[in-house]
Image 1 (cartoon, rainbow, N blue to C red):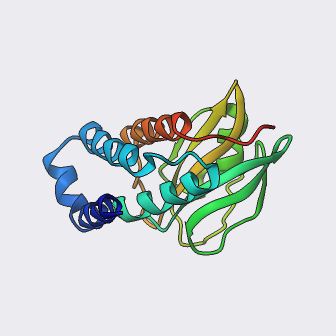
Image 2: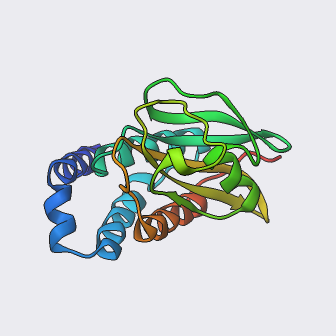
Length: 181
């Protein structure tokens, strides 16, 4: 319990200092640091709901300039359903191939969108969101969900964020017992 409180304190400090940290270390090092903290946070936990909830809260505290972070999970073939998240109320159902989340799910690739207004078919769940990054969660070549992060700032995310978030999703996959389809 003390260790978890320590992690929460560290994450809170990261939230306040993330801009200066990013200036003093490269993005890969920043995400490696987050990954090390995530490993400790998920230690001894494998429940998928718990881990997705903790993961979204952890990223919400650790990333600067975001207004939504969470998961959309494959509910039925070619359909995403809202999962654990941090932020304002959100869209509930997203078909594969629609919007940034549905496109990332269908194409099984991370999408970094600098300006959501320029993404054809963008689904505006929160009109304040201006940029977005979405990482698919793939098990046995099937998309089981996506990690979605929105920012109120244009060009908040770049390829380094996409790569760093893929590392975190890989750790989440390795440490989580997913429900059987």
